[in-house]
Picture 1 (tube, rainbow, N blue to C red):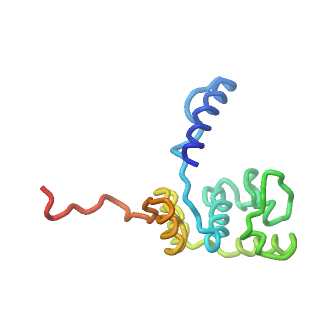
Picture 2 (picture 1 turned 30 degrees about the horizontal axis):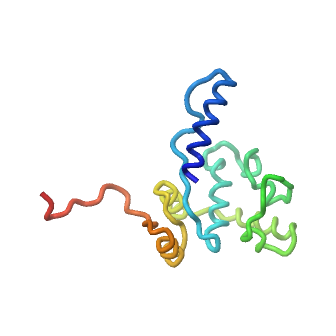
Picture 3 (picture 1 turned 60 degrees about the vertical axis):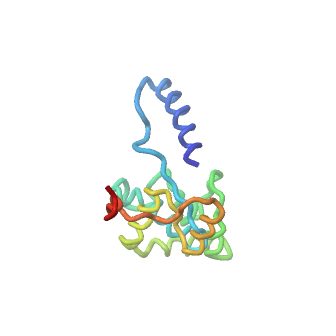
Length: 160
């Protein structure tokens, strides 16, 4: 995904800047993503994403942000660009009950610890999920998928 976004940004930014007579980047920082264990974390991450404009004081409510999927998920409006995730579909047996259950998720504030956990996994681009899921990903990819402690590793006592 990171390579795709890099290629997209490199090609699109030049085209966009040429059309609009500008220079520079369109986005701040690099694209970051983390693999999410759907079963437990998908709806939590959905809340995190759809509440980002609220946390950034861009809007007062998530339904006010024009680029949000909140309207489709919580209000039942149709959006041809969206495909409902299986975890979302499990919220209810019909569109109205799913939308109601999704709105209810937003009645609770995301705890600061959970927001920080998501941010650290995004920053380090590590797997967000259960230990079992993380171990499965590590076995399948051969890559370390666990978040490392913040800061530099401590120096070793026997190093020169």
